[in-house]
Image: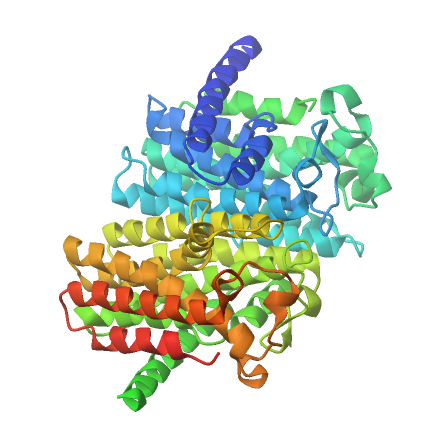
Length: 294
Length: 294
């Protein structure tokens, strides 16, 4: 089964990679801006959000074409957030996935603009997609603005910045991650399922699923920062502790964090099972998230 | 007539100010993020873009309610661009309209996030507006992403940054302003007219009008930086020359810039006359732009 999942994920990733590049290369814009946007999108890794979106679509419908613009949009949204997050005024990171961060490769002004450009462009590619009806465009773009905006991911970034200066409890930590990481996963699951034709009741279950998947994703991130392999991660381990970041292991100990992970995993799978559809790939993807090595 | 225009503009401005505040105050988000977004929106000045949008709507329809979300969206888009533009890595401005810039009042990270938040939120308020049909939402939000995004305003910002390091000619200067300032004015005019029900042929003429209005707006900005009254402007005059910015007066001399202004004014009015509608307020607004003192 794992081999199948890998093949399936690679198939989706190839389609997404091609579409992402097409969306960017066709832009007739100032070269430095274009290069900077392309640089960070090409430096992107697993394409987890687009794959999640297409997998959710796949539960209810076939032929990915219709979900590709939304899949690329969430990757652009995610990429912009990384570019801005890496800036000196934010996390001040020089490297991401082994390559210089955008502002190190170009400069801060260009990085800010590349982020702004990707953020705005992700709406355009949904709203111009000839495969979507006006109603679908509105639903998807609205969901993206809600999940990515000041009520969603941006709020998570803000809380994350503020948490650096204080001790947070488990409820606060979950809130930060549900917003900072979880909201774009929520978008991915719901947008894919919406476009695929899921019912309202299925969407409610999937929303639960996405919530726990987001927390699962993050707790595994925190665990990998302690137990991971630097080469596979593409970044040094132990940086969370060094930066005194609020993490699950810091709050619960490593064993407690692992236990929490199992709890999230089982809750995610339970919600998914209740979504009442053949979601075997999504189920496998969930297991994969909890055992991934990078 | 001028008195009427003033009363009319103040009436529109009041409606916009109230709606802007409502959109922000209702947000249940981290307090610092909210305060930072509100700070810059409330520090806003003339609300020129919303007024322009509502004036264009008014040419073809009555009752502004339907155009209010688009009017607020373009002001949020404009405000985010000012916040990011003021950052140390960009123009590095400490004051705007006599008040500390966002990153001086809060901090750089908060300013980046407040900008990101406003940029994302401007799409949400259009896409959720119950007064608009799905087709209208798609048209308006798509236009906003095109005008504000990497092909539009963001491209203009990039070219403007690059122009600081070199001598530009008149064609290059016009391109920078058409993108950096002009694109949001184009959005305002077209979105207002679209929602009001203008015909395709009228929209083509209005697009011409918006183009020259954008250049008119900018050349007057440049002229005011030399001849303006510091108190009325709320900023020191002569800062363009000090920062070695590419301006019309630098390229054409002050007399040449004034002559250019007259040329833009007459072209804008000609296009507007061809839009074949009772656009007396837009016509007055255009005269106002060319003679404004701040």
